[in-house]
Image 1: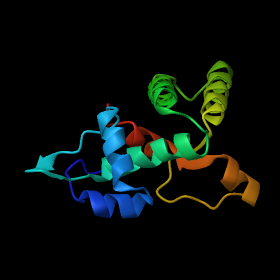
Image 2 (image 1 turned 180 degrees about the horizontal axis):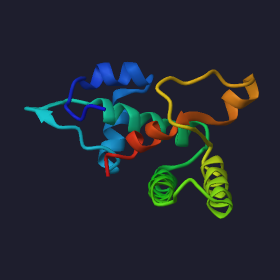
Image 3 (image 1 turned 90 degrees about the vertical axis):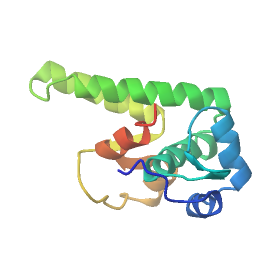
Length: 144
């Protein structure tokens, strides 16, 4: 995913279906740091991905700014844990299921690495969780 700024704030806000002031608020909170060209903020694909995750935490999980900060930290730690667990062995499978459950507590349903997402099984799945693939979760949090 590109980290070079591509989108001005109005375009980024349109992509995310957010108000530009909301993007500024998340920048003030320290969730993103889009580079600037003079006074113009330029949002990267990584910024857009991270903002989508933040939007999920706010709109679907009902979190406030401190809650989002905590959820982002927990998501980062869970991804770090996954990266350090070999996939083989019954104990490791149990640990991986526990981690997946923790992602579920954050409203995230992480699928195996794939390049395209599959549609949710039913409407309830799509409303109650933010379905992402593992690589996408990593991209969401690369802006540490």
